[in-house]
Amino acid sequence: MKRDYYEVLGLSKDASTDDIKKAYRKLARQYHPDVNKEANAEEKFKEVKEAYDTLSDTQKKAQYDRFGHQDPNQGFGGFGGGGAGFDGGGFGDIFDMFFGGGGRRSNPNAPRKGADLEYALTIDFKDAVFGKEQEIEIQREAECDTCLGSGAKAGSSVETCNGCHGSGQEEQVVNSPFGRIVNRRVCSKCQGKGKVVKEKCPTCRGAGRVKVKRKININIPAGIDEGQQMRISGEGEPGANGGPSGDVYIHFRIRKHDFFKREGADIYCDYPINFAQAALGDEVEVPTVDGNVKLKIPAGTQTSTEFRLRGKGVPHLRGSSRGDQYVRVKVVTPTKLTDRQKEILREFGGMTEGNSTQTDSNHSEDGLLDKIKRAFRGE
Image (cartoon, rainbow, N blue to C red; front, side, top):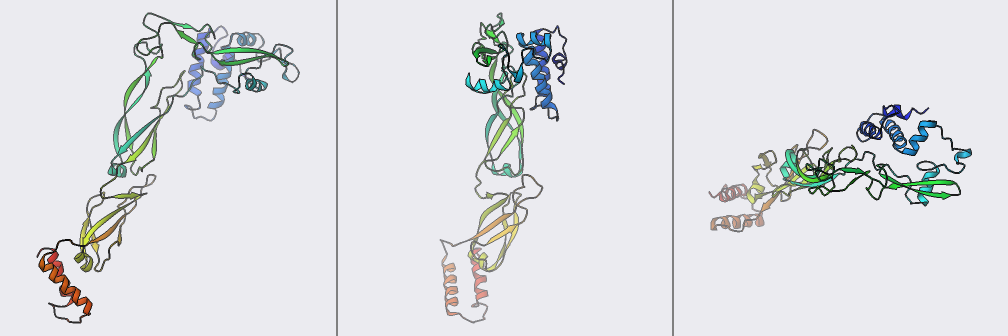
């Protein structure tokens, strides 16, 4: 059984139009599904809206005060004998598609969530790896300080729209074989606000809102990647009729790094070594996002060989582990050699072509490579 509409809104039967509107806005804000996540919030919101739709309409309110939830004009199958108004359910939706074409229309005075905003943010490579706290500045609407949101010039007043009598909707009555059909649409005089500003505020030009800049502190999560986004709840455009504010969606762009390249949670880099280091092996210091680490290059390493540094990659966005860093060595061929270096290389080349088996320390391959190593160090 339906509850009494006055009980739903917490009002007495002698409540004024303003009392009904205030009670509705308070309860609609409390039970709006975008704000209240309780299981029965949506049903309560619908109940509050249904009560308001009836009590805010002069004709419907008069009929409800007299007959309650019982419709005296309803006959067999729901058809009236000549005056029933279909304006929101059942056949009303079908008639709306023929007489004004859009199906059911929402109440323009109902709470509406504000628009979402988008913000493109470019950050450094390491900030994307480790995350950081950063301040951003967005531009959004806010209540006009001059008119305090009324849209009216100082000294002037806001009047109730004479086209819709404050309801925000205008009605078009169509007589059909099924009876008298009422089609509702947003009032063309007040654009659904129910109020008309005669003399507009010079600051906001009657809008009641102005664009302002607002600074927001955000926490960039460690591991954020190119093209990903994060949502900042409630920092978008303010809602209408007491509805919640929209959200801000931040889209991330990552600056390229001179040395590191990222693929998912892994980091790749190229590290140059010389011929002696590749042939004889060496221990080198390799940069990582955490600082330099030592990497052992085995003797006989070929160019493009990859080495993995475990846990030196990017933190996983939804987890505690990290990716790896892959170091690809590139053997660099020298372009400028001293005469002594050239002599040693020629000697080495001759030995490898002749497949010499000499073991003398001055002529053996190991001894010669040792000389090459010293020569590249400038010794």
